[in-house]
Structures are given as C-alpha cells and as structure tokens.
Image 1 (cartoon, rainbow over the protein chains, first blue to last red):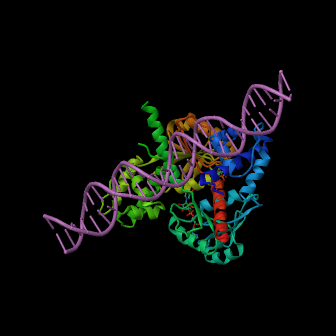
Image 2: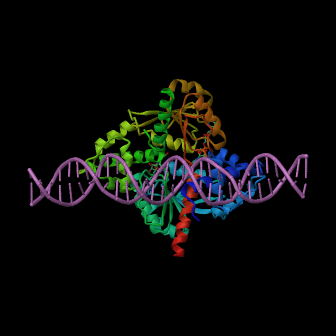
Image 3: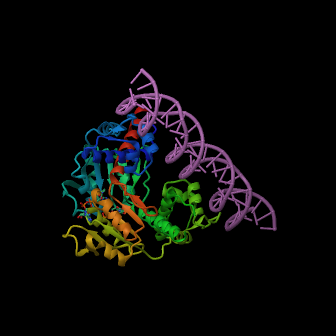
Length: 212
Length: 212
DNA sequence: TCTTAGCTGTTAATTTTTTCACAGCGTGAA
DNA sequence: TTCACGCTGTGAAAAAATTAACAGCTAAGA
Ligand SMILES: NC(=O)c1ccc[n+]([C@@H]2O[C@H](COP(=O)([O-])OP(=O)(O)OC[C@H]3O[C@@H](n4cnc5c(N)ncnc54)[C@H](O)[C@@H]3O)[C@@H](O)[C@H]2O)c1
Ligand SMILES: NC(=O)c1ccc[n+]([C@@H]2O[C@H](COP(=O)([O-])OP(=O)(O)OC[C@H]3O[C@@H](n4cnc5c(N)ncnc54)[C@H](O)[C@@H]3O)[C@@H](O)[C@H]2O)c1
C-alpha cells in the first residue's frame, strides 16, 4: 500500500467533504465535482481513490455513502482513536474543546501539564494530570497518538517521554523538529511558518499583479 | 525568483532555528548542522539558501547573523506585517494571545466576530469589532493578510468579504477549501487532516514493526 | 609559501508527484 | 439490439522536488 503523504491528506479531506455532502442528502458525485470541492484536479481524485480500492461507476460517478465507508475502512476507522494532549495552555485547551464534542473519531482521553494550577481537574471535560504522572498514566491509557502543545523548549523532552511510553504518532505544534526514533511518525503544524508563507506568496502575487 | 512552496517553508523554519541559535550565542553553522536541526538534508539546505543569494564560507559555513539578515530581506521583513483575524472563538483567541507579545513580526491589529458578546471590547489586547463593520475597518487598516477562524460554514462568505476589501493572503483554519480569485493566496491549516495523517502513518509504522 | 581537509555552490541524475490521454464500460435513447 | 455519450481506471508522459556528485574555494598548519 504505497499511498504518499499528499494522497493521505487529500483522502482525509475527501472524507470530510463527503461527510458534509452526505449530511445534505447528496448521493452521488463525479470526480470533477469532488475535485472542485477539494481544490484539486479530477485526475488526482481518481488516482487517489485507486489506493482505497473503491471503484466508481462511469455513469453515476461515486456513491457517496459507499465511498465514505470505503475511506473509513482505509483509515481503519473503527469507532475512535485514543489520543492524549501534552500542554494545556491556550492552544491545548482550544484543541481539547474542539475535539471534545466529536465523540465520533478522536477521543482526547487525558491532558498533561507541568503547571499545578492546571492539573488535578477537568479542562473542558478532559482530566488534566501532572506531567510527572504521565508515564504511569500512559501505561494504562495506551494512547495511539499524542498532541504536543508545550513551549518549543520543552517539546523534545516531552516527545521522548511519549515515545518511551509507546506512543508511535505525534502531532506537534511547537516550532521545533522533534528527534524521534525511526518508526515514530511526527507531523508538524507550524502556524508561524504558514503565516510566513502566506505573507511571502501574497506579496509575490500582489507584485506580479502590479507589474503586469 | 522561483522558490517553491516547500522551499519557502523550509526557509521560514531555518529562520526560526537561526533566531534561536543566535540567542544562544552561536555564530556559525554548517549546512549539515542546520539540516539536522531543521530535519532535512545538507544538500537541501544549500539548495534552498541559493534563492536568498546569501553565500556561505567553505571554511566556517554560514555566519548566523548575516544569514538571518539575508533571510529577513528575502521575506521582506521590515518591522511587521499587518494582519487581522476573523472569528474570536477558542482558536482565534489562542492565536491572538500567541502573536500578541511577538511585536516583532506579525501584528494582529483587529479581530472580527458576529457574536455581540465578543465585539466592542479588547480580546487579549486586540480590539474586536462586529463583522458588519469589517469592510469599513479594513478600508482603513489595509491589512496584508487575514487569519480565518470561523466555523466551516461561514468561512467562504468571510473570505469573499476579505478579498473584496483587498486582502491578498489568507491563512484558513476552517476545514473547507476556499474559492478565491486568482492572485489571492490561501494557505490551509487543517488540524483534523493532520491528525488523521498521524493516525494513518503511525499505525502503518506499528504494523511494519510487528510484521517484521 | 605550499598543501590539504572539508566545506560550499551548482549542475546533473534520480525519485516522487502530478497531469495527460485514452481504452473500456454502463446507461439510456433510438 | 445498437449506438453514442461521458464517465472511470490507469499506463505513460511531464513536471517538480530531492539527492548525489564534484569542482572550486578558504583558512589553517607545515
Ligand atoms: N497559541 C497558539 O495559537 C499557538 C500558535 C502556534 C503555535 N503554538 C505553539 O504551541 C505551543 C503552546 O502554545 P500556547 O500558546 O498554548 O502556550 P501556553 O504557554 O499557553 O501553553 C503551554 C502549556 O504548556 C505547559 N508546559 C510547559 N512546559 C511543560 C512541560 N515540560 N510539560 C508539560 N507541560 C508543560 C505550560 O504549563 C502551559 O500550560 C507552543 O510551542 C507554541 O509555539 C501556539
Ligand atoms: N479550536 C480548535 O482547536 C480548532 C482546531 C481545528 C480547527 N478549528 C477550526 O477553526 C474554526 C474555529 O474553531 P473554534 O474552535 O475557534 O470555534 P468557535 O465556535 O469557538 O469560534 C468560532 C467563532 O466564529 C464566530 N463566527 C461565526 N460565524 C461568523 C461569521 N459569519 N463572521 C464572523 N464571526 C463568526 C463565532 O461567533 C465564534 O466566536 C472552525 O472552522 C474549526 O473547524 C478549530
């Protein structure tokens, strides 16, 4: 199964789009329609969907609920996925709040922080423990993945502890690249970097427009 | 100037790494050291830096403060960049708080929301106005870029208003792909998508490890 | 001064990703 | 039944990104 990261990103987005359409009662969709919604090309949609094994119908395109089911299987979406979050600061709390009502997919079962004011209580319904208890708690919780929302200078040590406790996937919001053993997957979300990209390309576009 | 998106991402990250090192008193760095910190290859570092025009020294590598200065010029970093944010929910407020102290680069000068409880006051020191006032305010503020943190179903209409008011760069956190005219740059940060990617690849890694 | 080790800048090769292009199919109309 | 339309699935081509390779340089030491 050789699906590239880009393909996985798009498949995930197709799934979100399909959920939305499904809720609206739409039943079928053509690759070009899905491409328009996902901001890519029809060929790309068809090629991406190849890896899921689901095949559409030349007359009606893809059956939305079937395709969604097939994507669920592909993402091995059986109910929910156990996650924890480290760092209950402003971003951490926003994420807890965001994923809390979505009982369907991702369950953030615990938060960890080093600040005594944040620990020993519920944060948006999720229990927050002290970082020193983390190794022990993770032993019981056995989370699949962890979200890291601590300051940059603490992210590496936190990642190390997580990996030692058996976590094999990390979504890291701190603007550092974590050093982890092979076979641990780290995905970075670096807001400042993205902002800088917007600044750079929007300026370039503006200049192109002005100069011709 | 043909710098790809990937290159711009990495350059932005190099800049952050260099700032950190600079603060620690490090003066020079080799491509392989920078590569280790930025999690890429030495060849990639050298190639990326080509577009900035800055040249290193074969004996001492790159002078950190000179290189940083050169990256600042490349990103056209003169003081700061004017930004606004639409949607003062939990994510929006976290972002305002995050960028507020960083007076150096990005200035979020105003927030907009449709919820009367959030408007007409300061949020983390940033004035929050009602969405209906946005077009008028943007006329005065003339922001370069906008952050969009409204629910998915409102993001498209918000984007349209922003573009009409002259915004040419958008950092969008809502899980929809915005339809904007050519020459408006949109960058998406889709947390759910990233989480799904982590879930997928970490599982794949685990399985590879178990099966041999 | 000359030599040398080890770096950079850059071209060329390779790999990855995207796009093209079209055979083949299912459907509905004649 | 036969035909034609317009879609999908996919091999092949093209484009983009990464990696390798190495000439050339720089400073330190003999
Ligand atoms: N807030 C944002 O919008 C935003 C945006 C982009 C990036 N980030 C990044 O996300 C991370 C968190 O940002 P934030 O704004 O939430 O910061 P914050 O200071 O509000 O929260 C950080 C939290 O981590 C806790 N912490 C610190 N060291 C810890 C440790 N060793 N173990 C456990 N917990 C520890 C702190 O007690 C605090 O609660 C930072 O790396 C930041 O760069 C945040
Ligand atoms: N909170 C998170 O951690 C998180 C994570 C991933 C993605 N997101 C995305 O970010 C967006 C915001 O998330 P949130 O958790 O902050 O939601 P939220 O409900 O807390 O905040 C949304 C805010 O937007 C305002 N709003 C709604 N419609 C508006 C309109 N038409 N014009 C102006 N303001 C309007 C609301 O009043 C509210 O204050 C959503 O699209 C969400 O999917 C959030």
